[in-house]
Structures are given as C-alpha cells and as structure tokens.
Image 1 (cartoon, rainbow, N blue to C red):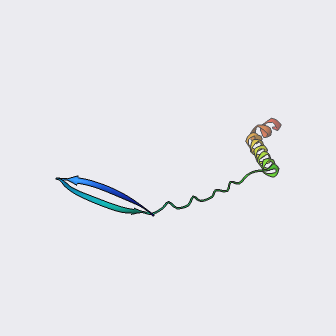
Image 2 (image 1 turned 120 degrees about the vertical axis):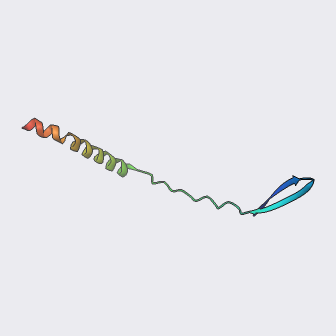
Image 3 (image 1 turned 45 degrees about the vertical axis):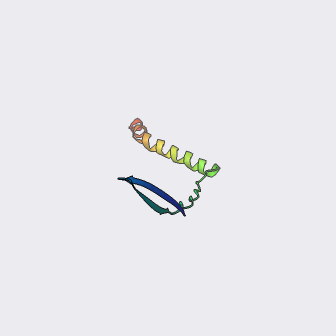
Length: 64
C-alpha cells in the first residue's frame, strides 16, 4: 500500500487529503505457443491445401 497526499489551498485554508492506493497486481506470466518442426509442417500442409482448393476451379476447367 502506498499513500497519495493532495494539498489544496482555498481562501488561506489548507486542506490535506490522503488517499490509500493499493499496490499494482503482479503481472501475469504469458506463455506463448512456440512452434517447432511439427507446427511448421502443419502450417505448410494447410497452406498447400488452401492453394489446392483455390486452384480447383481452374484445374477442373482444364479437363473439361
């Protein structure tokens, strides 16, 4: 806990206001999902699947 004091002077009268400020919550740890060879392989396979599906109309039109 920490304290914040505010001093205000109005018409030669001093007012001191003390506010109790709670400490900040501890930062949460962040765990990233790190990729490896398997993640890279899945990403490459997914990319090839997307490309194959995108080119499917052109491939079928070539055979007709």
